[in-house]
Amino acid sequence: MPDAPPLQLLSIVIPARDEAGCIASMIEHLEVELRLQGVPHEIVPVDDGSTDETWAILQSLRERIPTLAPVQNPGPHGFGRAIVYGLEHMKGDAVVIMMADESDDCRDVVRYWKLLNDGWDCAFGSRFMKGGGVIDYPWLKLRVNRLANWFIRMLFRIKLNDTTNAFKAYRKSVIDGCRPLISPHFNLTVELPLKAIVRGYTWTTMPITWKNRRTGVAKLKMKEMGSRYLFICLYLWLEKYFSRGDYRKSNGTAA
Image (tube, rainbow, N blue to C red; front, side, top):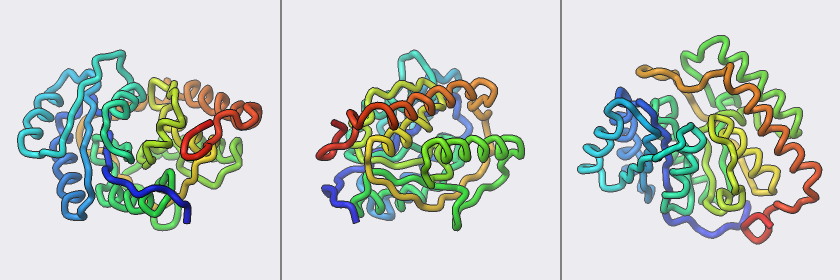
């Protein structure tokens, strides 16, 4: 098992834009699960320019959930930028990035915390390994997802088969060692795990479950993201094979 210092506080960073229909129940379920399992935590929703009641709901929740620490990204906006803003404002020495739409299972957050405390630098969930699963995944989106992840596996020669999923966990030392984070949109979900792998951080996988949102509108637009995913993959492929290890992990951080 990897050797790493014990962890003190888990931050859960949740990018949110116009999620008034589900943000309250999502945070309430998450807080109850973490409290019952004894996980020291803070919940950091990042309001990314919402035009609905998302921010007002977060402020109301804050009055009765002491571990809630919402922030507003003043802009520029974008899924990746919202996550980076949350990472810059979190206090924990470990972080789970989680969606606001209730698609991710709160129980998996606890399992991530346990894996990081076992000494791993990163813990990556997969919906497509034994024990994982998806509920009501749109047919076309699923096919595109599997093709994109197959491409990433072949390009980087890794076994991880769900790189594009945002729901993953990292020690803060990994986040610091992967800076600067340059993806402003959903391509950050690919940049973070691939950069951690390329830079030599330890990682493990576990099965996770995913269900399609019940309220609101999905923010990922596949037509807009293809070139952005390709750019970040090629950028990190060049780092992997041509940087001569200049950015690889050394004594807990990237050299």
